[in-house]
Length: 484
Image (tube, rainbow, N blue to C red; front, side, top):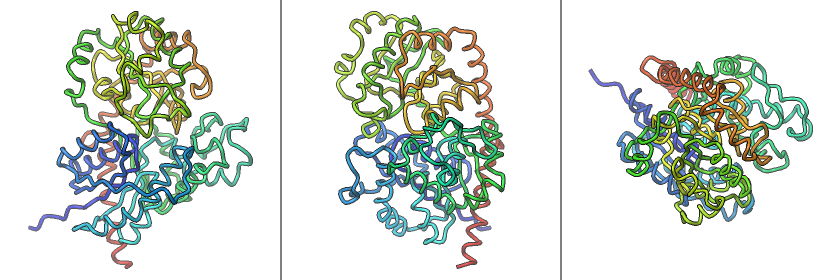
């Protein structure tokens, strides 16, 4: 009997670790668990050493074909040097569309399905052109998706700036969004990034379905609201599939001998890991206050330290993972800090192997910017968080983690707006590591970890959701062929 034909999926990732990692991991899951053939197309950031490492590792798995698109020519795009991060990503993806289309058409085997991330919605029309099903992969959470796909409605109904409102933004069936928690593109409605954001949200309607990097038990109420006809029927033609948590696998060798030896010497769950993701930075003043807070807490720590920000809190996004001069980075710390904390602290200039650190038994807390990749990595390792949001959708994530899921504590003020002083840093660190509230948060995150493990196991909710997506994709493909 002839074997059934493998479905060939083409996945498109926009630049940056926050998109690239979950797209690659989705591709690996489609191949390993559901019999797909997968080609991942990426638009890399030329300056990103960490991103290059992820791409290289993906290529060595032999599960996927990973193809780099040529860098788009932006000189004629009108993109200013001070353009917001979301604007730059949107323009880069738009300018890459001809190259992506050409690459798809030139493939020996035409793909059976197209999957793009949220910045790639302008590429969905290529799926229509090729006569194949097309999906949007939202690499963040369900609350973020609800806000995004409801934003064209909010754009028509709300007058003035969202951040000037005194009342939360209502989303049918979902937790309301406080004005201070809106995503970066919604901070200024006159900015190009806002127009790009609303456009992307409107284009999701073109998709045959949405994939989400969460699992059913994590956000059951929000997912239920998203799937109601009065909500979903207005914004997308197909279902929502929960496929997470999709995170980087642990590579124990990635720790390095010196770091592994240091971690192995520490007591279980005694180390606070401090990192702001691949792109986050702090002001010089905030960096100093954070250093003093860590020292005053008397807790063990590992700190991935970057140069202070110059213009914005996403200041390292376009050179994430660059090494830099370690002595220069350390010079921004208070005088004598490294000497005074040498017996219990470790500073890693510019970059650290985050997944490997979080998975080590000695790590018991994570002071995090709340990017969704970092959030999933923390929860799946059973590590409670101090939520320290900086940019993008991180304020929304921080509220979700602290107030709904219950796996994080957070400063009283938004770190993106005010300086968190050393005394509060000390209190937050001690709360998570040794306080009563921290014990409850730790117990809760371990429940979440078990739930995540069940979801991705064979027969779990995320496994079954991807299986259903494959079936729906085949059905949709047959429908398209009949109609052409």
